[in-house]
Length: 150
Image 1 (cartoon, rainbow, N blue to C red):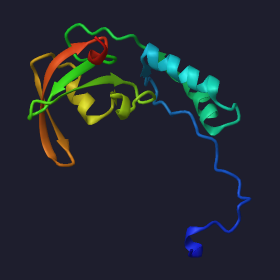
Image 2 (cartoon, rainbow, N blue to C red; image 1 turned 135 degrees about the horizontal axis):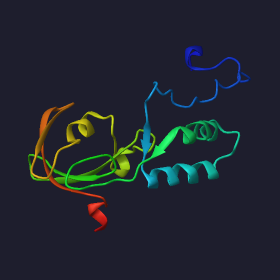
Image 3 (spheres, helix red, strand yellow; image 1 turned 90 degrees about the horizontal axis):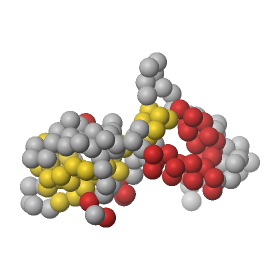
Image 4 (cartoon, rainbow, N blue to C red; image 1 turned 90 degrees about the vertical axis):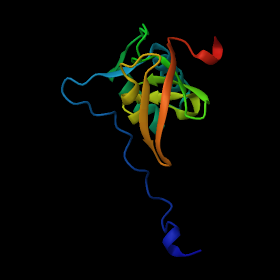
């Protein structure tokens, strides 16, 4: 293997610790109650000296827990069921960036799709630019719980 792809000195210390997110003056970083508990559990399971544990320890105090109030409009913490142009449905929960996870259908409030959804209600349509081109979605339902578990 070429030396360009290997490290010559394995004794090099790891990089700096993961910093907490920087908040602009007046910025609030929201997290759902479930997301906050999950992050706390994750911290409890980490080696205290690990990079992830240090990052979580620095981040958790900066978060503001915000319980969803899903009253017909897509807002932070709500589950939104979307129907695509071919009739397929999928649900996404709008959450803070610290708990976003596409595999778990948790969409960061800062993502383009979430920004399009915020304030909309069932029956509204949204258009979003995807890698394959523009896509249109209809909002089928909005609620406080995951429609897959209802």
